[in-house]
Each structure stands twice: as structure tokens, then as C-alpha cells.
Length: 591
Image (cartoon, rainbow, N blue to C red):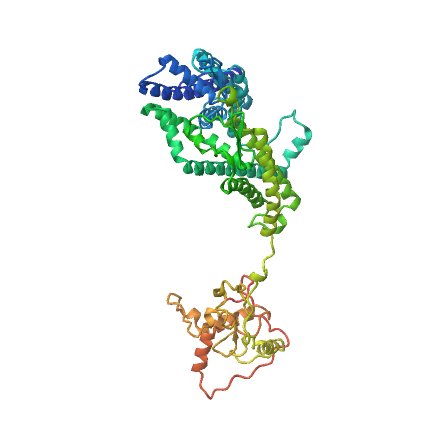
């Protein structure tokens, strides 16, 4: 016998689910903090001249972990005695904590057999509370270290980043639904989200905005790579000057790699036009570098342009936002006018322009948000402002994507909905002398059949209508033969054959070897079967037999004696023949 555990009341089950979600948040934060602490400890051990003991290394690791969440740090020990802020967040480090918080919330909200599941709001609150508890403890532990955390930044943006990642995890566990909105939201928005059309347009706008932002950031990374390639010697010199031992160089290399997304955003801001600040008195734009830059020694900063007016090579950076706008327009047009959908299902020009404008707005908002976290202060005085200015980069991205994207989307929509058969795609004209000469013969055969008379079995067979097939293009002449060939071929019997030549009308046509050769397909059996069907049809069937291929007609004609005369045509019956008596089941005779 198996022993079953007693059933818990619903209140106890809900409490256990919330406790499990809380522990998941604690575990996610501890895993991220522990991983970074291990890396910093390894670098501290490998350093030949450490400045502090293991406690100082762990406090520095806790401060760097909070910096990855957006917290601002302060260096109290400086040569001038004035605390120096450190606000540039390495964006590559942000990916780890955000992913851990997202996964913890997703696992806590997903239904699992045999495990109680809290509500979506409960999972979100429990995971966020557990994660922020560890963050508060890390901030308190790093308070006596060489890098201290500004307390105000724990609420914003650290708590906001954790809450956003947890909310995204709960949304993923629910299947990423687009609606319904909360009951406290405006009724107009609730009704709009409830419409499928609105959801489709909003999804297309979000996807296009993401594509535009991705292309913009990728173009910025390309600009940074090209600039570093041109000044590789300066980058190598600054890299070697920062550290003389291998452990220090590994630390500098890891820091440079973690700042690569920041450099890509700086390049994107440079291509947009506003550029970025190299201190409080210098700004780098495609038009040139103005002011006196306060650039510390760092490998990535070797990509900064030189002082003085810009060159045409610097102006080429303006192609990055133009390409991003075209990519955004193309992403919208793929949904507005799909290639495999009917013309009637395409969006109107107004809808296309509206969705493109919304996508441009989203791209501008995303660019402003990313450039805001990509820069910050690196010290006091001249280094208080470093990086792109978000309130200039965002509107610039909106202006570029809307100014180029909307007209491009309308033109692309017009191109995808163009009428087939333009001058360069019309069918090639048939060569002269290829007119169909068998029309009169076909008309005479039709008159003979309508008049009730027919020749012998060979002459009474009407020809099949001409099959034109697919239209012949100038660039695809193989569809109906070469452009110079005639579209009408003569059959062996002398009559016109369908264009292109059917296989059964080819003089060299031979039956396949694997076709059956039993008496069912012989002429006598076929004629008897035809007569039986005619008798059973009650006079509804025509007087002429089934169509015989030209190859068989030619063989039968060759076997007929030369002095044989064709059978005289018999008059058509004035009334249908009396049907044969039906079988026992009420049906006529069958072959």
C-alpha cells in the first residue's frame, strides 16, 4: 500500500508557492553575485601586487555587481581628495543579472505538475523581493570598500531593472500575450487592444522598431571597428600602458570586452549626428571634433576622431541611420503587403505610413534609453560628462527613421503591389507566319457534329481546343519552346495540334513499357465498352467515340487497304434510342 500525504489547505499551498518564488529570486541574485566574486578573486590572486586583502576584493566584486544593475559608484580615495563618481555601466555585464532574474520569475510562474503555482502578481512580487534583498545586502557590504554605492541609485535604476526583468519573465511564462490591459487602464486603450487588427499593427510596429534599433547599433559597431582598425597602433599602445603584468592585461581586456556594446552605441550616436561627449568641453560629431577632449588612456577610446574638421570618410557615417530607416521600412512593408497574399488584403497607404511612424517612434525611444545608460560620468571636473547625450540621440533617431522610413515604406508598398505585365515583363510577340490555320477545319468539324452527321471513326473525332499554357516570357523561352519556333504544330493526321505539342500527338510517341497490355485496352474491347455506356446513358452520349491518340490513328490508317472506302455517314437519330432494361439494382449496363 502507498501512503499519501495529507492535503494542504489552499492558504498553506499559496504560502509555499510564494516562499518558493522568493527563494528563486534569492538564488538568482546569489548566483550572479557569486560568479562575479569568483572572477574578481581569481584576478586578485593572480595579481603580483594586490592593493588590499581578500575582503577588499570581495567588496569590489559586490560594487561591480551593483554597477551591472545601473547603480552609480563613488571612488572616495582620489589624488585631489574629491570623491569621483563612476557612472558608465558596462552593458555586457547587464546581460547576466537580467537573464537570471528573468529566468527565476519565469520558472516561478510556469505551471508544473505536482508543484503549487502562485499567481502572476504573487510570483512577480516574490521574485523581485528576494532579488532586491540580496542587492541591499551587497550594497551594505560594499560600503567600506574602495568603490561605494550611491544609496539613491538602489531604488532607481537597480530596483527598476530587477522589476522589469521579473515582469518579462512572468509575461514569458504566460505565453507573451498582448492584452488584456488592467482594469484601471483607460477604456479606450482596453477596447483598442481587444481588436485583432490593432494587435497586428502594434506587433508589426514593435518588430520594425526593434529591427531599426538593431541595425543602428550594428552600424555603430561597424564604425567603431573601422576606426580601431585605422588607429590600431594607438589602441595597442594604450593597452600596454595600462598594465605591465599578464593578470592586469587580462583585467583590462575583460573590461574592454564588457564595454563593446557601449562603444557600439557611441558609434550609433555619432552616425545619427549629435555624436558623443569626450568631457565637458569636447564633442565629436560627423562634422568634426570641437573643443579639448579629456580622454583617459583606454584601448576603445583610440577610435575617437582626431581634432579638427571632418573628412568625407567621417561623413560616410551618416549612411548608418539611413540604412536603419530602410530596414525599418522594409520590415513594415513585409507585413503591409505580403508577397503571397491577395492585393485586397494589403494595408492602405495611411495604415502603412502610420505603422511606420509608430515604429520610428519606438526606435527613437529605444535609442534614447540605450544611449542614456551607455554614458555617464567617469570622474569630476572635465570627466563629469562622458558619452552620448540621450535627449539628442533619441530625437535624431526618430527624425532619421521617420523622414526616410515613411516615404520608403510607401514606395516599397507600391512596388510590391505593382501590376504584373509591365513593358519589360510582357509576353514576347509571336513570330510572323505562326497564325493558326486549323480554325476552319475545327469549325467544319463542329458543324458536322451539331448537324447530326459524322464521318468515319477517324474523321469524326474532334480536335481538342488549343492549349496555350503559361505565357512565354522573353527571359524564359523554354516554357513554350524557343522564341523563334512556331506555336502551332502539325499532327501526323494533318490537323493542327495544340501549341507546344502534347506527348500523345508526337509521331515518335510510344506507350510506356510498364503500361498494362491486357485486352481491356484493345480497340474491340474499347468499342464494345463505349456502346454499352451509350445504351445505358439513355441517349445522352454523343455518337462519336472516345478520342484516339494521333499515333494510334496513324497506325490504323496505315493498316487499312488503299482501295477501302470510308464508311458512309449515317443520319443522326431523331430521338434517343430506347434504353436497355436496367439490371436488378436499377442501373444500366456497365462495361
